[in-house]
Length: 294
Image (tube, rainbow, N blue to C red):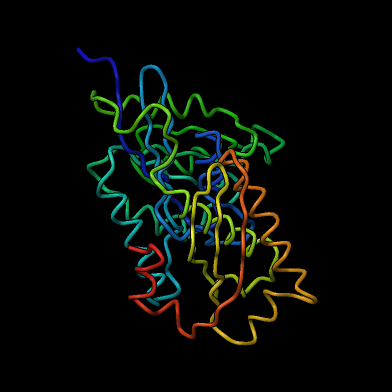
């Protein structure tokens, strides 16, 4: 019998619970952007981890949206439900120190025909470990989980245990992707995401949710990548905020995004970043499709 296992695993959970951090730690590269702001992830992103006996194709999903109903959030929710329908295994991520109605809303979406592994994250923040046992008992009563694994994605703790539990439920089959592949997304897509991450990290609380990023030029010139990225904002007043005094903010966004790109792509990057105003972009189905939203 073929000992090799390969399959898809959806990583789901409420917004800002650490799904992208977990994906990046499992894969060993920054595939999915992260910030301390909720709802940073807007796309389904695959991260691929290949071992000698198994290939894990993780699908990072946006946090399920319950408050907003514009076209962007509808597209994000479709990404979650589609991922749940298509995968072999589901990993539900919850915060060890905070379980609330947002988590329960995600549990209601879990497909009963798929094995669901509960990853109880951020255990490094619980100093008295005896406090963890009643938390796990409470969580176990919420759903018929195939396994419950306490983890710390930030510290990389117990991720081997999480993989071992996941592997039990993967089908025996050939590799779904090449051994050296780490994501299904193109460099052009990742470039846009890296710029958007810096926007989330460097701008105030509300503006990043009213902005997106599109790459308008991506050219290879030998080992050099020439990239032109547009930050699309909803209002004219937002343009000045993104640019910053004397252009300092947008320069920092471009500089930090370029450094990340050079690390991942393994070569020099010339990056131009500018700002465009497009009122109502997040409720424009056609524009969202052109930006890669499904």
